[in-house]
Image: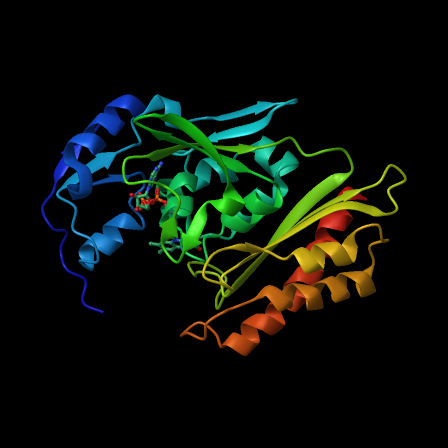
Length: 294
Ligand SMILES: Cc1cc2nc3c(=O)[nH]c(=O)nc-3n(C[C@H](O)[C@H](O)[C@H](O)COP(=O)(O)OP(=O)(O)OC[C@H]3O[C@@H](n4cnc5c(N)ncnc54)[C@H](O)[C@@H]3O)c2cc1C
């Protein structure tokens, strides 16, 4: 594919979120915010979008930092890079499904530039951070001219490259509630090679066990790259509830998770292969989350 040079644009570096919003209001449809540029600049080179104004969010302090609180959980600024998440001990230890995802994304170079906010706002069905965030019950803060609103990540996506984010809003923070005792998660990704590739299938599992660590008291399964948006698999979750987790039960949940899949066939994989691999990866993600609790 022939990639052209970047089209001409005016570059803005706001110092605060409110300054970024003012610029968005001033330049309207001709403006685009960007963070790492690893999605946006590629799209601009391909002339899929040609904004006249680029508003860089990376200089905004409010959008930076990873803050953990034992009661509230973790707050990750939208402009936090994937590498920052990868190197965060608190994410690795307490929110390991997100760490699993970031660890298998792109390459070290892309992770150094790319952000978690940009990954969600690109809103592609294969966005790797989406399934673990959905499985952990995360939400995002969206800031617009009339204030801030909070949206669950599972309600954020509207279709391929579409989300509930309005033209004059920016995503400021990702909030993951503290995970309860006897709970954990895992994210598994199938790709054609071991790095620098988008997911053929991505599966995140979150499990909580009862006080005897015997029965499953809470389960959330989220799937990526198998529908127009990242999705939950409620029938798979139902299979696990109030049961003892073992290989057979995890396999049944895997079968149930493929029921909600609506994948496409493309250069990465056929529809049938994606559905089969959802079954297998769901089973493995459940068993890995269970292993991490026990
Ligand atoms: C070689 C390569 C490999 C890749 N591999 C993977 C992979 O394995 N998995 C994967 O999921 N992705 C992958 N990607 C895609 C990309 O790197 C990620 O989606 C990355 O997280 C995007 O973040 P960014 O900061 O670069 O976003 P940008 O390119 O800066 O922005 C992306 C979009 O989000 C909007 N945006 C960004 N931040 C905000 C905000 N705070 N508020 C509102 N809108 C915002 C922008 O306007 C733009 O529309 C890959 C990309 C490349 C080039």
